[in-house]
Length: 252
Image (cartoon, rainbow, N blue to C red):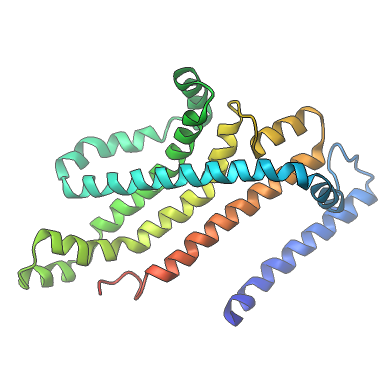
């Protein structure tokens, strides 16, 4: 805990100084609230609307969690299949890379046309956002298993299944969690984008209504909540990483 405190005080001080400068600037230059509200106004607005806003936060959190779990699960399974079957990797890996050249914001309207305004297109958007980082990171981790470990297991007469579970999987965990941390931050963004397609509740819906009515303070409330949710998801993955990885992913 002391080590964490020593590392976190500097960014905390920088953040506080930034908010102080922001607050003072709005007063000195008399910046209109509809253009750039002061941090104090944003905080005050947050507490005043929380009773109604918490439903939107819960909706986005639930959508993010579901899409993250599905996307990461598909990514892990895909990476394992591509690793175990080299012919599949040669055939589909280039397509996997090309799939990321399609902007999600462009693909989203097509998903609405194909699947309607229900939950499915939103889950697909988040799944696509989370899938690629996990799939690529896990595949790279599986392929970068130290040769000395593989040689030792083969000399010991281990089967391919034993080599996979006892050597390749543990060695790939650091790469896997790197992909999970990237997906954890992207998943909230994907959820908000998916809510722009047409949802009844969510931070994305709240942000759209706030911007259309020039309630800039509420837009900033939504932005800060998105950042906080991303940090929460990232922290959960960081905790799981420290819990599961021992010896920096070396086989045990």
